[in-house]
Length: 413
Image 1 (cartoon, one colour):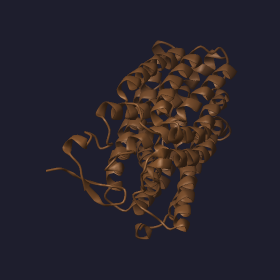
Image 2: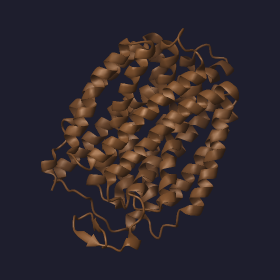
Image 3: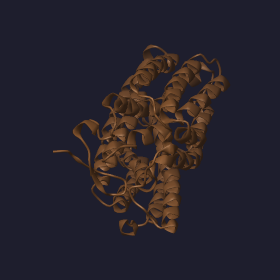
Image 4: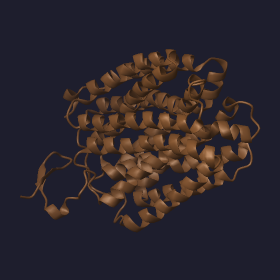
């Protein structure tokens, strides 16, 4: 029997077994795997600096890691602002071409960072890396979802891949800094990513037309006023959630180093502990992705955001092994909130303009949330990690208030 596929206008159509791709993403499995791997690469490379900042600061003559941290802000500013042109080029020029630029650009920027000799040179290399990293979210995720029949599952698996990249950054960077030096932590992954780009070029077929020229339709429709509210909520929630994401992922390595002083002080072991936290927390996105396909989006989103508040407050007060447990809870609910903005884009925006809409939303939200990277070092220096986590709990309250403004599923036509 031929399987039934539900199209964007909810009319089932019969297709042959040969026409159905092997993956939930609706494309060849090797290409799907490479697109998920690209998400891991994206997050990994953005966090190499934050993980190795102590070693780099010592090499460049800084007395404290907090003083070097602001030099990495350019990467996150361009990571956000670059999403706007990246999304536009993805829709109008082609997503395959942009993904090739992503692989080769990030790899080359990492090699450049490894060759820098002072803080300003490193800042310039990291800013260039951030510009290429901006390509993935508005281009790679819509490319992965463009034929998805179960978008929640695809988003969940893709989110798992991205967060495993964060775990790999914590683990591999810690070991490479200890055994090979911080420059190897940029150079070796950079060469590997260039190899991935060559593989993607060989396996991903040419696009017959740019996404903007295709015929498609959003899977759900809202009245114009409701749609405008969804976009406003999506962007505002992404800003507050992005601040939490950047504060934690960029600060957790130094948090563990401070709170485990006298208990565990080996950088490689601390990196392995943090990688384990990220890997376990990443599994939440697979669960959330499956739930998005099955239950109402708004109450699920509210539940996950509400849990952030007590867990962040708990992490502010704990030390040692209790901190590790509290941090795991924090990262579970922070990672668990990530799939919702992509799910809203898939639900309410048709594929012809998803890259542009995602790019505009990310340019605003990530452009603002990148301030977390610039503020992290100075905030910890003048106050403490405890005060930072209390501030993040207040940010979670703001996210909860914003998400409560989402229209219910009954408003969806």
